[in-house]
Image (cartoon, rainbow, N blue to C red; front, top):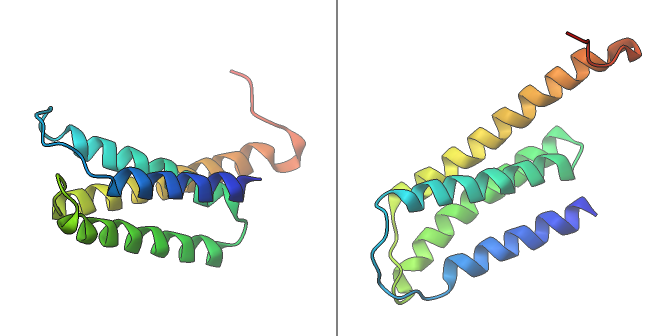
Length: 121
């Protein structure tokens, strides 16, 4: 089920990234936060949807290349433009997702060893 959610989310990100938009104002650099957030969520979904480290690495490489490809193709979409900074925000979101999931998995293993669970304060 998690794989279906992951694939659906990837397709949603692709769709939202390639639809033409009207040129309009907005908060400068807010789109970088949107890019990083979208790819962070995508990375978390990828991380939890597969068990193997090798499969996770393959998915992260795929998502990295997807982010670059989408930015490249946006040169040809009306109202869109390619941005190296958007690609960097995508990559930062992926890196953050991997780091968060890795730290969480270490903490989860530490507190679940021996069935003790999370210690009370």
